[in-house]
Length: 298
Ligand SMILES: [Zn+2]
Image (tube, rainbow, N blue to C red; front, side, top):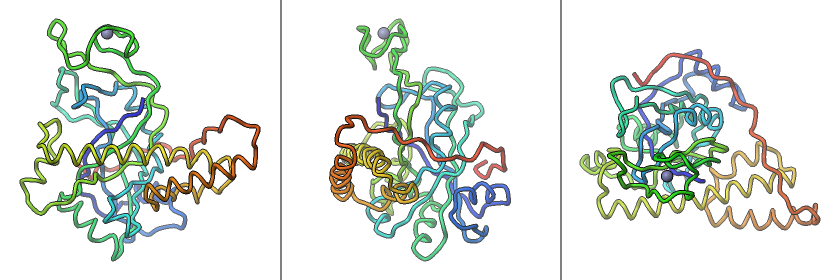
């Protein structure tokens, strides 16, 4: 099952030595602290969301390594400037005193991202600092989905998510994450009105009609882009394109361009091995280990 999740970004700054060491494991050439802006993003949590679904606690832990090195996408306005942020660290964090809708301790997957400073990036950095571009969205694939009431596989029982059974809200529990796709700043246009921004940042709120439409369109676009990206990666691996090239592709291309690339790669893959019906799964690239460090989002 594929899952789209909305989170938040928090203001950051210049990385300290520990953070810079982790960042430089991903950077192609060693970076100096003053070249880099880093910030935290709330990628996922264990609360029941608007779709009456939630990740289980183990899933948060399991998905952390899947996100490392993953590129962050920006909406059209930003992708035109070829901006990209990359997650260099991810870990499960707790918000003390806060509980989920059904009373469990609230946990979330906290990601740490970095991007290069510069004239093209500075407006985006200013937006993150100012709280404008705070919502992020992630795409994940989970192998297991179970009913919260009876524990059976989703669809194998008569319970309906969103309904109450003996005072317990029926929801679906997502576990066993298999892949994390790109994450993105949501395509809701940045508005100068503080009220709009506040509404856009509030989790689990009742959607305003106009915003619901925007969100649904944005979610559809992201889902489509995530599917295209996955296919392009598999085909790229089959065609033996260098990993460095395929890593950058999704952040650089619009959906139509991705689709055109997919078609071209399909053709190439077919010529290379016409008898093979199965495309290999792309193994994850080498990832830095988790290391505790200073918390700048306190
Ligand atoms: Zn059930």
